[in-house]
Each structure stands twice: as structure tokens, then as C-alpha cells.
Image (tube, rainbow, N blue to C red; front, side, top):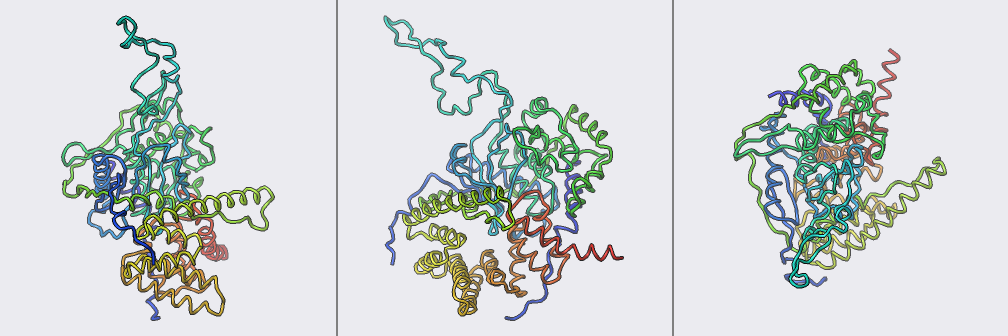
Amino acid sequence: MMLMRGLLLAIMTATAGTSGAQPVAPKPERPSDVTVVGRRSQPSDWREAETEHVIVLSNGGERELTRIAHDLERLHFLLSVLLNRTDKADETIKLRVTLIGDVMQFTAMDLRNLRWQQGPFNDAFDIRRYYDPREDGAVMATTRIDQRAVLERGVPISQALMGLQLPGVGGANGSPAMQSGLFGLQSQPDLIPNVNEQSVPLSAAGMVQAGFAQHFLQTYFPAAYPRWYLDGFGQVFSTMTARGEGVLEYGRAPVGSSSVLQKFGSYPLADVLSGRYLEQRGDRTRWTPVHAWMLTHFLFFSPTRSGQFRQYLRAIANGTEPAKATAIFGDLDALAVELRSYYRAKKPYEQMTYPVARAETPVVRRLTSAQAAFVIGRLELGSRVYIPPAPPADASQADAARMTKARTAALTAREKWLARVRADAARFPGDDGAQLLLAEAECRSGFYDACRGTADRILTQSPCNGAALTWQGAAMAGQALGGPVANRDAGLRTARATLAKANRLDTEAVLPLAAYFHSFADAGIAPPVIAIDGLTKAMTRVPNAPSTRLALGSALAARGNRAAARSVLMPVAVGAYDSPERASAAAVLHGIEAPEGAAKADD
């Protein structure tokens, strides 16, 4: 299978020696609320479908939810076969996918993508998807309603039919009554195309599959990929379809791809491969998801360019500037000629048979009203708790004003959101899940007294709740660091003992390991080896979490383990996405490589 070979060679070879190497650390050193009875058990309209590798939540129909979750499990198996992972152990935390009712509701949530970006695509392709590789597991959200990309706007039907008289009933003297406009089509007006409109469909299932494919690649093969490649990789698998029992089809062109390419035309290859296309705004660029699909699809299948493609990806993964890596392809005009010929030719696709039992049917359960009340809050958490930094002392007046405005807006939005989370949690005082979200929101916002109070209340009713112990320990550490210096060491020791207890209750939980590590790092103390080992395990569970990679890479660099630190930091420092951790990771990486560069120059 040509695509299979292309994927294996292009991805696995490109990431060899960079992302696959796990950091090797030295051996360890020894070192009375009222409960509302029954309210939380009332069923909601939200359901959760779980498979071996994914959890999908939706307030839509159960059949639709089951189909999407099942297809994602099929896609996981397909990618595992193509990338030779079917027999590999999998310790990663399941991706949580939330399907939001409609575009307006999704937009109103204002889920800012801090650690994932797409395109930039032309504004016609305003694909609504949220992805956040959090330290305790990645989350993704999108609308469950099919959308369309409008390439050429037409005239609204209501205007086109203005004054047009349609026959009805009930007129005077038994004559037919006349009705104006269309009747009975108001249920989904956003999906009704305008007259003479040119558009292409964007299925909700395809958007989810594209995001899942990107997540798979960055989870099991984390590396510094160019963004256009990740976009194209997702699009290649967005059209995966189950054809009958035990047959998967993948690699087909997205619906409407010819119309998109005819509308927007070709795009300069030099700008894409060098990364210059990232500087263009959506209202000016001609770059689209279909362009990303075609370039990636072409390089997967091309028998003459696959070797250069591998070299290009390997160079990017190793930190080569994209503009320099582009030279690997040689004459770009010749490459463009081949790509145009590929565009005009019939595109290949493939089918694969698979054992049906390897893609299990999801287990579906209905959420209670308490659980459903916090589905959206958990999604919003990632965007709301992050506050942009204050302007540095040497910032220009314009930059200082811009940064201050952004920071003030974020602080105001966080306060409003926290007030809502507190009010919602008060409605379900006996529900541990509701209170845990509040504790996490308060701790991550720096309100350690409130966080500890919430965690204490949870432990009163659930003494063995490991997550509550984690937030109790994190709050203790925050209180110690913010309190009198004389009490700091004792407070931190108590916090670490609490976090160790949380770890013993759930040895697979990530958050106790991260909080234990930060109880040293945030205090300016070099984390001991046992804390570094714990964070290494946390990265194994969530390999693409930038915050974990930054913390671990910094600790390894401080210990002089430069090779391992570089491997950990590269996907964050020079990878496809701008994240809050990117600048710090790049600074640590620069500190690692500068001495080596100086030594080579002296030689």
C-alpha cells in the first residue's frame, strides 16, 4: 500500500532520534454543607460514549454520538496499522471530544486556541474547532452540526423570492390563498444555501476525524512538524469511511476539492515550504485546507519525491530553518509542475480490511444533571485561567498598551467565569465532580485559600478522593510560597506529603506528579530525581502537553542532560504551534545549544 509506506517512512524516519527518545534521569534519591439529595442524579440530555482510546460527549442523538465515537476508534486502529503501532503498549490518556450543539453556541463559548492553530486559511474556511493538549490529557471540541464553506456568496432565498406568490389554501370564495416566500424551511436556515451560491460542505464528522488524526500524530510521534503538514495530515484522514463490515476507505479527496482549487488557484510552494505563508491574514490568503490536503497527499504518494519529503521533515524536526530545509526539494518550479499534473490526474485512495473486534463498539451512558452542568466549564477552563504576561520594562509604549489591554481583558473575563463556576458548584454541593472543577479553577487562578477550602470540603465527604488530595496539596504549596518565609519549608513539606498520598491513591494520575515537581521548581529549588522521574511519567501519559515538556526539559537542561532536554523541548520551541510555553522553551533550547556551537566554532 503506497500511502502506508509513505506514512511509515515520512513520519517514523522524520521523528527518529528526536521525539522518540525518552529522557533518562539518574537513579532516584531517597528522600458542614447541606447536600441536595437526588438532584445530582437526575438525567440530562448529555451522553458520553467511551472506547479504548477516546471519550466523546454530546447533547445530540445517541446514534450520531455512537457512530462518531466508533469511527474515531476505527481511525485509531487504521493509523496504528499504518504507523506500525498495533502491538505497542499504550499508556496515554484518552482524548476527550465534546460536540457542541451549533455554531452560535460554540462561538459564544469563546474557546481561545492557545496551544493549537490552523492555517491561516482563507476566511471562507473558518473551521470551528478547539484543541488543548493539557497536562492531564488533551481535549477537543467542535460543533456537531455540518457546516459549509462559502466560496461565492449568492442572494438569500428570502430576497430572491421577495414578492413571489406561491399557491396556498384558504383564499376567499374557496380560491387558493397566496403565500409570500418559502414556508416550513426555517428549522435550519443556516444550512440553506443562497441562490447562485458556490459552497462546499464541511461535515462535523470530518472535522472531528481531522483533529483526531493530528492528535494521534503528535501524541505517538511528537516532533517539530511544519503546520501545513499537520493540517494536510488531518485532511487526508478526514474522509475515512467504513465501507461495510471490516473495510476502511481512506485517502479520498474532500468533497468540493476541485471547486476550491479552481476558485483560489495555486499557491506559491516556496511560501508554504518555508513557512512564509503563516504571515498572511485570512482575508488576504488563498491558502485553504484543500491546498494542505493536496500537497500532503501528493507527497505521500509520489514515488519520486518521497525521499526528499522524508529529508525535509527530518530537517524540520531537528531544528533546521524551514527556508533552508526547502532547498532539499531542489527546483521548486519543477515540483510545482508535478503538483499541477497531480491535480489534473485521478487521485489515488486505499482500502484496508481489519478485524472488526479491533475497533470496539462504544459504551454509551447518560450524564446526570450535575455532570452535564460542568461539561462546558471544563472546556472553558483552559482558556479562562491563562492570563497574558504584563509588559516588560523595556516594552515600547504601543506594545505596553496592547499587552496591558489584553491582560486586563483576560483578568476581567476570568473573574466573570469564576463567579459562574462558583455559582454552578453551589447548586451541587454534594457532587465531587462539580467541586473538583471549582477547586482546579481556583488553584490555577492563584486563589489558593479558596482552592484549599473547596478541596477540604470534598475530602470531608470523600476522604479517599485522590483528585481532591491533589488540589489540597497544590493549594498548600501555593499558600506556603505566598506566606511567611519562615514557614515556607515546613509548608512545602506538608504539601509534598499530601501529594505523595494522592499519588499512592492513583499511581496513574498525572496531576499529583506535576504538582509535586512544581512544589520544588516554583520555590526555586532544583527538583530531586524522584520528581523528575514523576514528570517523565507524566509526559509519557500526555506526550504533547507543552507545559509538561517545558518543565521537564528545563529540569533536564539544568542537570546537564542536554540531549534528552533538547528532545523534550524541540516540539514546543520550534514546532507547528504558538503556545504560551514556546518562548521559554526556545530560550532554554538556545542555552543548551549555544555552548555546543561555540565549541564547534573554536575547533
